[in-house]
Length: 219
Image 1: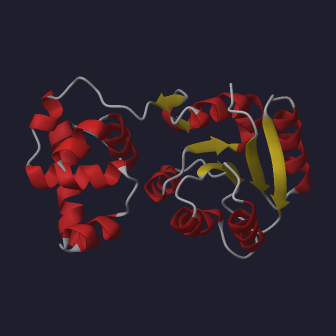
Image 2: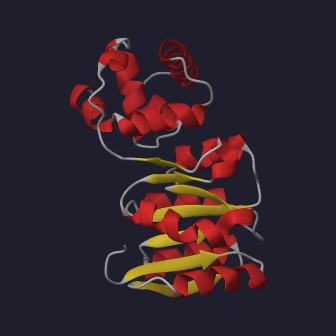
């Protein structure tokens, strides 16, 4: 399932929950837990020092929260795969986690049952979202789709914006790269969603990821 010597860090301030995750990880061949952290600051420090392949991050931790750890870690460790493990069944947190570059969003209620499937998807370069958030456990391939008709509905500027979404750039980052305003990017994203008949930002992220290769060619 996993590549040899895939290394993992767990960051969560609840020792009992960490123990449960460790028990699951111990059952997965070729996967090695290299560190645990009880706070966001400790997690970021150990991530930068140990450079693991995968980080399991809780959202609510003492000090720096999981999203801030994710944001900062991605700046120095672009290849790091991050799995957000949380009790927050909220699409707003999911949207933000995906925008910042998370590979998965796993709810704690089902974490011990779904963690192995989640890790398998993440190692394969896919995005995993807990079933409770979308009626099914979505695994979104990071590959291009043969369906180009929907992309043809978009203007060149909209495709450039969508390419940024596929890279998990925030709207502010897209605005800086394109030298346009944040509000203009938000308007483009809204127009794209209308044209593609999509509700919610995470649906747009999924679509962009599935069409990333085509978008990069026209970006």
